Length: 248
Image (cartoon, rainbow, N blue to C red; front, side, top):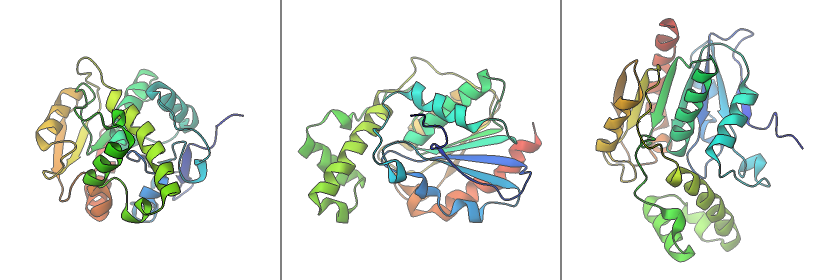
């Protein structure tokens, strides 16, 4: 059975949107992470939320372990449209970069790339949590804040979430390029100094990934600032959407 039509949740504000914002969640999260974004987006912006397999309405599907397969599926379903900007947090940031690269190679270069709480793709991940035995894996996720307490209290739910997170982290922690790849796409990096997963110093190396300019926006919170301070993240992203499309 084809998975076409399952990957993207579209919310068009008008018949002819002026820009398209594609949103990619972090490991273990679904499209609901961005549930407030469509109603708060500027007029003329179509918000497209990516729903990866293995979560929410796609919970019965196995998560993908291939970056190439993920990017190809999103590109296939995205199709033609207005100028595209891409936002991704953590694992979503890595996917966002690889998708931007693929779209550029296909002649559909994105107008801007937003990477949030994400390491640059040419740096190996130092954590490798997905390789830990289950008790150590759960403990590491608790320290990181990756599993809510109410999930931990229910063994069946905890095991389901653990399987998804292990698969997502295997994808995130094993994917890296041997050297920087610079795209002709301006990059805005959202980062927090208190992030212990992706350090503030590490995010500076995103500057090597663009030939069109790089900027870094500091946000409060830890690695999950995209949830803790979603209004501030949106405030960093939304004003830059039309700035990016105006320069195309």
